[in-house]
Length: 413
Ligand code: PCP
Image (cartoon, rainbow, N blue to C red; front, side, top):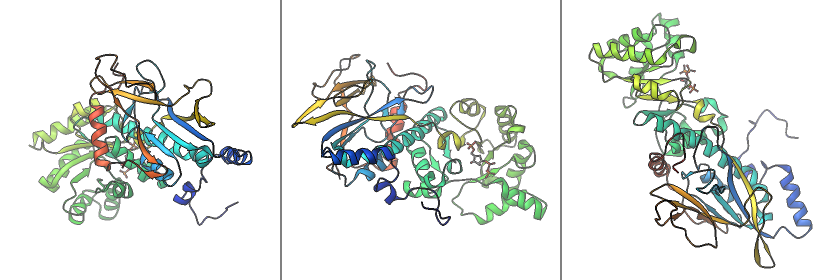
């Protein structure tokens, strides 16, 4: 029993690679298979979404980057939709959609089912929520401020998939490093509180920010610490003039009332003094349902924390659907699942998906008759990377191109 305070409670790279984060029954299964000489039996395991969070008609595949890293070196083949691919729980005919498959000796990967599902369900949950929030925001900026709303050891992962899903930038330093980007942020209430307490004037904090922080950092002034937002907004532009790129409203719930109305009023007063250029950044409890009203009121950037970092996972399950017996693959699965390995075809015009047994020929789109594109590609061959995961900027672009064709509330068929 490891009892020491000299370590945070989280799993290291080595812990994951050695299968230490798995469920004990997989370790026992590996032991039983080995005892009966069945650990080398080749299987094909399929990953399908059991359900999406309430109200989600589609999801964005996330977590694949780390799945590939986890299984790299394990003698298996992995087939998957590319990272960032939009998927539906079921296809046009109601057949459950496989998003990934692992082929190989079951004993070699049995203990990895748990971490693989963890990466995919959380990565997809965060990326999907980010995509929904960005879809609601359109051309308005969405900034991932969610590092404080999740376990710090995975805040880089949360920020990474918040960006992949559609956020324009992230505040978490290590997430930005993984993305090869600069972290973004404004200023915390604590800064104004210190200046007010010590120097008697919280607006001196704004000047201090402007004096000390690198010149290429946009000056976004937090305007809800002590006085009414409209008053603080005017003081901010009076104090820093055209150095003010934007103002942030993080109005406490007790004062929020009609947040859109507050934004509209601040915008109006700034306009009266010829500062229509000042961007309105809002944060605190923001999600895809709140954004349309706040954007219409004049907000042009959204700081989003818990809604994305704490997003509901996409419930994904792994099931064996084929076992090799005497050199021949046998289609077999538990009740409720579809035996035999499959390919998913997509009509890129209609965004219609069809799930087809692998040995069947390529279908035509049931709606427009066009040829359809197979989505599952080989990403690992005998543990060697077989298809590179593109850089996050490309994956994000791929996500936004797909989501542009979709609605937040219904499947495209
Ligand atoms: C929070 C902080 C986060 C925002 C709100 C995330 O403000 O700025 O970025 O909120 P959400 O999780 O509801 O989306 P404060 O807690 O006021 O913190 P600070 O003073 O540091 O800005």
